[in-house]
Length: 168
Image (tube, rainbow, N blue to C red; front, top):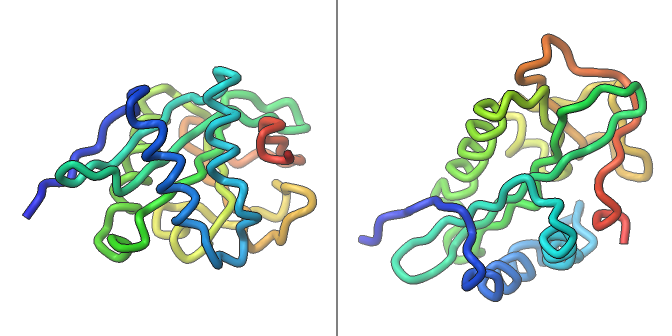
């Protein structure tokens, strides 16, 4: 049995991340199938706060990214987690959970005020993220937009703006 290792991405990992991310979001109701493009644009514009991969044996089986977000009330030091991708053949093995925990640990170590995520609410709720009526991401179904305060005592109120890579 191969051991799972989570580490920062290297340049040689980029093609595998692109392939994995494209495959991971097929048929997801909250996806517009642009996740691989989003990751590449964030990387190309030096806007990735971090990018971690999960490696099992020789294969990249998971990926998670984070990037800064803006909040209309002026709150700073908040980050968007995602996209998070897991190889469809290894979904259900806890890889996504390990990546998510690593991302939250990294953000906490950085002193991040908090994090937002757009995606499967059942998954993100396990890590303390929840829908917050005062914090919105216009144009998306609110049930798929979740947030958690980390260093900040409370979740801010306002509209969140992600990097332009997310809007195409």
